[in-house]
Amino acid sequence: MSMGRSVRKAVIPAAGLGTRFLPATKAMPKEILPVVDRPAIQYVVEEAVEAGLSDLLMITGRNKRALEDHFDRAPDLERTLELKGDEARLDAVQHASGLGPIHYVRQGEPKGLGHAVLCAKQHVGDEPFAVLLGDDLIDENDQLLSTMIDVHAKTGGSVIALIEVDPSQISAYGCADVTPIAGEDYVRVNSLVEKPSVEEAPSNLAVIGRYVLHPAVFGVLEETGPGRGGEIQLTDALQTLAKGEGEGAGVYGVVFRGRRYDTGVKLSYLKAVITLASERAEFGEDLKTWMKAFLG
Ligand code: UTP
Image 1 (tube, rainbow, N blue to C red):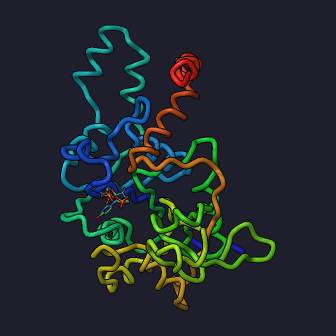
Image 2: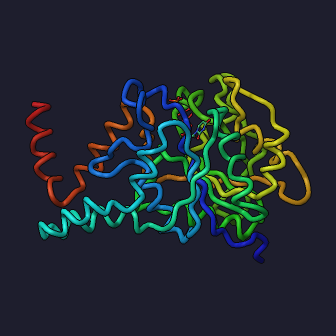
């Protein structure tokens, strides 16, 4: 039985301060940092388009220019490449602006992920939507978003993505208490807590940056006060939906076992660059040879 409406819209929050990546993020958003040869956020936009989401809304803040320019046409540059006959680079440049019209809304002040999502209310309206965090990359060979959209279609509720982490790492994430559902490959989320201490954590299941949300989340976010770190937390609103009843209530989880890279943290950013570069046909083998020599 299908309960949820189809998902067409993607919201991509990219308005955070990126303090963990200072000073690189002093004058530009962390989402624009290159992973091999593309800004991190381009992978995220490509993932949304690949999952069939045709209406893209990016939440930007200060330093938004680089984000908008990256996904816009660049007529002078395109003309120069055309005159040089450099088809490959011309294609690469045009690919980014051809990913579809992207809408932008500005979050005046970075008051938290929940507040960033609330900035999408007017654009999204009364329909389910996906949220993809601009600094969280899911390997293109692994399915996640389309599975989550299917779970929304089945349940009608909101859907979060979870990974198993080492229990000592849980305090860096939102954490979910879940119950398996017989015969299903998704779980019911009983409760959520943002960045719990190791002792408080109800599980080692960490929330990562993909969501499919029921529009009821907007009303809940409007009522959600600042939580951990003084920020309006999406996790707190989802906790309300998980505990609630009736239209829009219910939160489900998909446990993701594929590859994910957090480009907002220096060490995992470096791992992402090395992993994805080593898979590139043009220079992957050369890079691996060099790395072996480098490591001695
Ligand atoms: P993070 O907590 O990872 O981003 O938010 P941050 O606040 O930029 O990071 P640090 O802690 O200062 O290093 C997850 C996602 O939500 C967006 C971020 O841009 C990131 O993609 N976000 C966060 C907003 O859009 N607005 C906010 O107010 C907070």
